[in-house]
Length: 101
Image (spheres, rainbow, N blue to C red):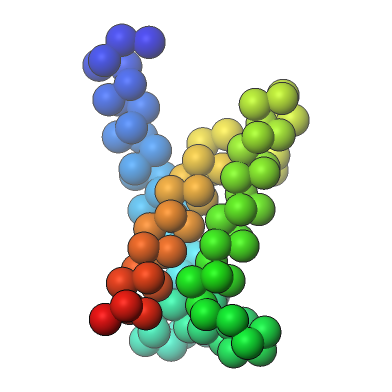
């Protein structure tokens, strides 16, 4: 893959990542202002920080990515899986930022 091809792929994935984040966010937050509400709610139920909840979700997606390298397909497709991984990394960063401020 040439540099220009990879840059085009990055642009396509970034656009998809933003679409996925925008589309799923209202359902996960139960229409609350706090965009990390679902992680905090689940963390409260389990007695763990919201960042740990997010890390668990992220790990699930990492395992799905590993299976994708072995030829196992996923309902969202390869690009959807990558977009989800990117989103969970960003969400984890936002939770760590919030927890450490």
